[in-house]
Image (cartoon, rainbow, N blue to C red; front, side, top):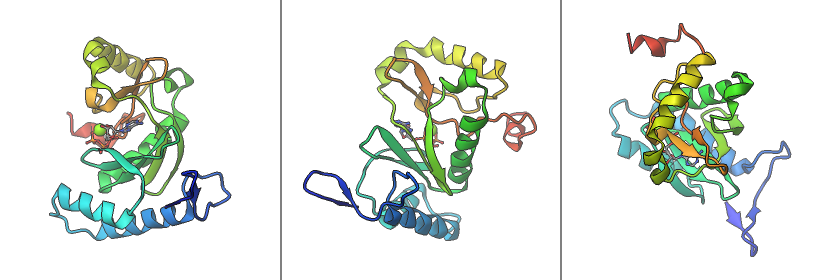
Length: 190
Ligand SMILES: Nc1ncnc2c1ncn2[C@@H]1O[C@H](COP(=O)(O)OP(=O)(O)OP(=O)(O)O)[C@@H](O)[C@H]1O
Ligand SMILES: [Mg+2]
């Protein structure tokens, strides 16, 4: 990505309202194609290095988990790119849940702005852990709310929550949540 004197993005913007430039989308496509060919026993570190080198995005990396690498788009949004198959599923699942869940639970999950194969753009949330320590009981309440509204909140834990401007606890990683009680993910737990 190129920046002009005002720090604005320069490059080919697709006129589909996307926050990403054409080149950035192409770099993600290239990485996803490469990712599929990565050696099964690559270490997570090797995978991360391979991903960052191929993506070559000029955004700051603000986080990563086992399955996704997260960049700050500097406009109040973040970009998550898959590092493996689970990351691919998680991105698709978050887009699905956000667009199909009951209105009542939407305020508890991080809003999705746009998504494509292997990537998703979400609102940037405050991940300051100090709140999280105080609000441990909120996590349990949240778990119950999801269950009431037909979502099984698999992998809901402190590392996967953050806070909105209104200081509300919001889930930022709901990639393994399911609205489908026959989901194969649930079979891991029984
Ligand atoms: N919406 C967000 N706003 C701010 N930071 C975020 C956001 N989403 C993710 N992050 C940061 O990136 C990290 C990794 O994101 P995420 O948990 O979604 O990845 P993952 O690979 O699915 O994680 P896991 O290892 O739990 O499966 C988070 O712990 C957090 O620090
Ligand atoms: Mg996570």
